[in-house]
Amino acid sequence: MTSVRICIVGTGYVGLVTGACFADVGHDVVCVDNDSAKVALLREGGMPLYEPGMEEIVQRTVKAGRLRFTASIAEGVAHAQVVFIAVPTPPQSDGSVDLSYIEKVAREIAACLTSPKIIVDKSTVPVKTGEKVAETIQRYCPHRTDFDVVSNPEFLREGCAVADLMKPDRIVIGVTSQRPVPTMRDVYAPFEAPIIVTDINSAELIKHAANSFLALKISYINAVAAVCEASGANVQEVANGIGMDRRIGRAFLNPGIGFGGSCFPKDLRAFIKIAEQLGVDFRLLKEVQAVNAAQMDRFLRKITDTLWVLKEKRIGVLGLAFKNNTDDVRMSPAIALCERLLAEGATVRAHDPRAMDKARSLLPGVEFIEDMNEVAEGCDALVIATEWDDFKHLDLDRARASMTHPIMFDGRNLFDPVEMERLGWVYRSVGR
Ligand code: UGA
Image 1 (tube, protein in one colour):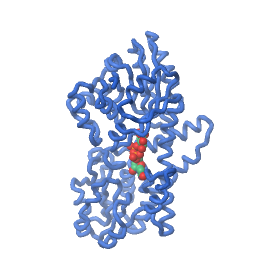
Image 2 (cartoon, rainbow, N blue to C red; image 1 turned 135 degrees about the horizontal axis):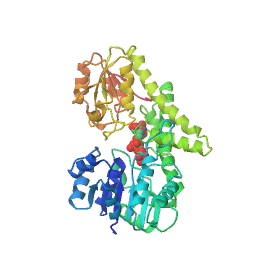
Image 3 (cartoon, rainbow, N blue to C red; image 1 turned 30 degrees about the vertical axis):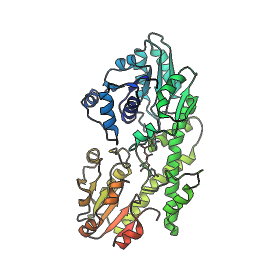
Image 4 (cartoon, rainbow, N blue to C red; image 1 turned 30 degrees about the horizontal axis):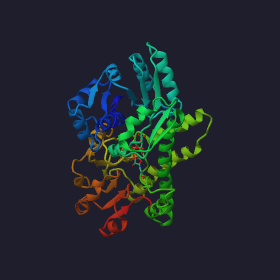
């Protein structure tokens, strides 16, 4: 393999996983972050986030000398043939994306560009951002150095980002000329995935269109779940039945309490907004948002239909992260659920295998319980809010015995309804 010298600007979720995995397959990587405390933590072997497998990869590649951290963008750029931009693109109040971090980094890269480089945008951005990045670098580069801008969106899921990066379905490379393509192929050769070379606008759209389609799949199955509940059908059977059609596929057809996280809600809004700016009313995606909001309302209604008044009720919540295998609580439906229960006057006790530290400041009124098997104690109901596998091993007998009445609202369909009723539970799940 041809080792490429790489700089990654931004050691957030995407930047850190990408940098570490690039180093692991043999590239020579420098990760840059302007947060010097974070750089110091990473240099000392600490991890700013939890992602299965990441810590080992960072340790191994740092030890091998292929991964380094610095707060100096000049040092990173000087080292690299290819500079990846992986900084946040947070939402603004009108749904559009705040591109100021991207713009700032483009200027910073331009200022220290003294030899030809490939500048790659990996952050999720609206279509036409690549053109702006190229313009900005051109404008702010004092040495008039030659460069290429590439769009290379990421498709990593939190909780399985390492596997997604190491075994991708496809790599998308958006370019304006063929010049950067051989080096980009060298970067991705070790991953043995199909590579799509396209124009920059299409590459940027592929990302927003992919995430919006996945969100649409989830809203679709959540809407089907509502019909299943009303008709006595079982959504899991329906999902299996339609998912076996290869044109549909079984993935992302698990109903729940709605999708969350730092990507789907934000990317949907951004895609709707950019379409609107381009003169297209993307009503289908607005409906995807509406179904998602209604899903949480329907779930809460199930709780109030059963418990009637929530004031002074003690409710145990299992799960705070927005999905399993992560400590990320950004836009977590589980957090929103706790807030709504608290607003109704309930007392909430909660546990999450990884996300309690990050949830604490968001949920000051909640009692956090270290052992998942103690959450049910004295509770009027138990709620499953995140799809952690750990919860399947809950001591159901102990929970049942310690509750005022064994009632479970399973927002992630982790248990079998027939078995739960046989065990004496009042059990409500989604679409079954
Ligand atoms: C998502 C995409 O899956 C990635 O491909 C993309 O790279 C990433 O956004 C991003 O843009 O950076 P992520 O948000 O990490 O990844 O997590 P997902 O596994 O997609 O889950 C998102 C939400 O959908 C979670 O709240 C999850 O619980 C929910 N979900 C997922 C369902 O309710 N049902 C499903 O069948 C699948």
